[in-house]
Length: 265
Image 1 (cartoon, rainbow, N blue to C red):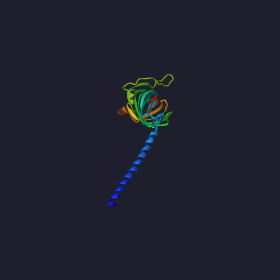
Image 2 (cartoon, rainbow, N blue to C red):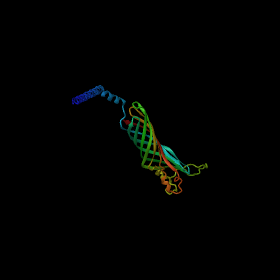
Image 3 (cartoon, rainbow, N blue to C red):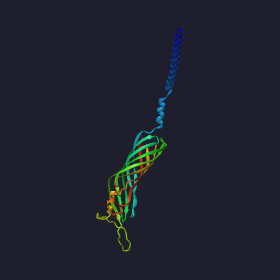
Image 4 (cartoon, rainbow, N blue to C red):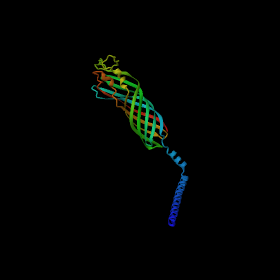
């Protein structure tokens, strides 16, 4: 009996001593963490983060500039061509900084475009006013505090608000005294079999792909160039006109833009 009691007392003392040792080690560890936390300079950390000028998650800006645009024409069985003319653009954007070097940037651009469209013996000046809505996926490279290059691609949609056509000239055989023929202006009547005066239909809504390359300065000024090409064939108006040479062609709008703007950081 005495042996059992002695064993119980010894076991109790051992458990007590072990618990005391664990408590002391735990207390020592807590004291070390407390000392390290007291030495941690949170203000200096915040100052360093501010000096790095990390980009905001969402920012925005405005830009304006000019463009040139025309049509890419393929599968045409008669001579057809499109010549670029100068237009203007004004837009804004939101910038979603996913990481320091990658962003998603949707834009809304009011755009006025024009070009010359020539088919058979007629050349028309086409113009339209609408809106482009591109969404870019951009990579950024360089010193984020001093300025960086950005480039990427995406998709866009174009919606037309208004459009018109003005007949530039139509080549009409008119024998001069010299025996030569020269172009003379003539309005195309509605009863003409190929009524090119209705080429405003070529400015239908469409969608496509786009690319952008640019540079952003430290104080927020932006310079960029954009290229957009439609994936939509906009010659659909002519598919119902049997025998029309434009009906068999594929016509895709394209534009090149140059913008200068500012982003609020």
